[in-house]
Image (cartoon, rainbow, N blue to C red; front, side):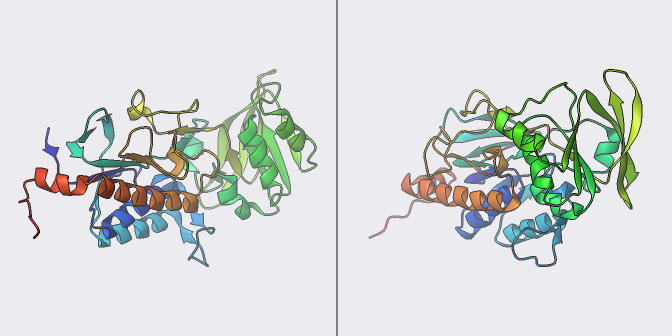
Length: 330
C-alpha cells in the first residue's frame, strides 16, 4: 500500500467542520488533505432545505451548501479524497493514518468525522430522509408549521425535540417502545404537561408511508402489547433515539467520554489529549449539532493547529524531512 508524507495536516471528515478547517489551513499555506469518508459532505448531504445558515436569505439545499464549502476550500489548494479511515497511530510522531487506499504520515491531524444519527432501520425511513423524515428538530422544525408530526424516542433528546417542535406543529405525538420514558424527571414533566404533546407507549414504527413528492402521510404502528398494526396519519417523523460519534478508529488512543465523543481537556482549545491532534464539529459536540457551530469549531481547530505547528517549529522540520534544502539566514 502506498505511503505518502506529502501533507503536513490531514483533516478527517468533510462536513462543515472539516471543510472550514481545510479552508483556514489552506489560506495559511498549510495545504491539507481532506479524507471525506463514506458520506462526503456529512449529514447536510441528506438534508433538503437549509434556512438557518447565515448568508443564504432564501435558503440553500444541504448538498449545495456542502459543495460550495468544498469548492471554496479547493480554491485555496485543499485536496479532497474519498477515502475511509481504517486505523490510526497517534502514539508516535509523525502520526500515521491508514485508509482503504493508502497510508499517510503527517505532522498534525484534525478530526472532524462527525456523528451519525441513530435510525430506526427501515427502508422506507431511509427513502424519505429529507422528505418528511428528519433527525434534527432545530434544523427542520420550521418546515412543519401547523402540521401534526411524530417524534420517536423516550430519552431527554426526544423530550427536548418534542417540546421544541410544539413551537411549530399543531400536535406532536411521542412514540416510545417501552411502557415508560427514560428521560430525566424534569424533561418528562415538561413534555407531559405540554398540551400539544400526546404519548403512545409500547409502540414501534413498522413503516413510513409517503413519497418524495408529497412527503410523509402516515406511519404503520405496532402495539407491542396486542401485536396489532394500524395506520397513524401524520405529516412528519422526527427520529430522536440518539447519535453515535464516529470515533471508532480512535478508541484506545484518544480520550473519549462515556458516549464516545472526543474529549478536549484544555479550555479554549480544540486539542485532544494528544498534542497535534485536534477535534471539531459533531465528533466533540453532542449539544448543539448545528452546521454553523460545526463550521465555527472547524475554524478554531485550524487556528489551533497552525499555532501548534508554528510553536513546535514542526513546519520547518517537516520541510527538511521531506527533502527540502536547509536555508541558513545571515
